Image (cartoon, rainbow, N blue to C red; front, side, top):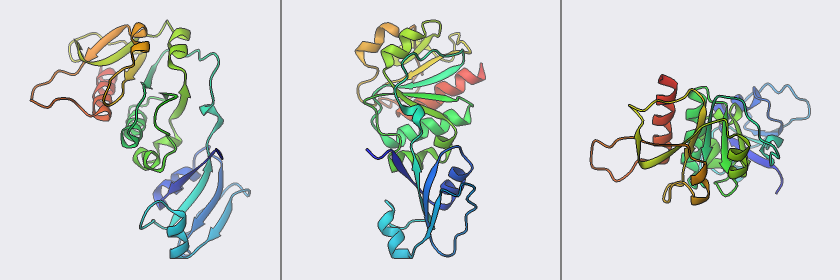
Length: 226
């Protein structure tokens, strides 16, 4: 509603301050010092009790910042993309998974992660924490996924399924959408017509399934390795 989100902890706030994100205010303990380049950023010294009231953590680490959500998360009318790897999260609901996927994309140099409009709030404090600073580098957008795929028919869409082509033996393009479905229900039926390639991570043990973020990491690694 307010277009703001919290960044908590010394390391994350320091990463935030080196990013393009606009920072409205920093609430810090007296012992913490931060170099603020933008004079519009208010720096407020608070005591331990006041910091705990601001923070979502029981034991906050020195500082909490209030930052603005960037406008590239607004709806994109004609999302024409260049070739490259792009992550697509369809109805992802777990904040830990969302944050880990953003962090893993950053590790593999993937610059864009798209979320369906009914996915988890990526500025939820749990997502911000799990992303470990990668949220400030990876461009994350909410978008109408059928519109995204329709506008980019030149890019292959690789869907992750329990059954499909073995990711370790199938040929993978250097460009493509890597589509990660909902943790419980997989990829939405409305997106299935846009999936050009069904891929799977072969199972060698007895686990019923893989965690969505773990699966996403394995798939990203294979695309980058090849």
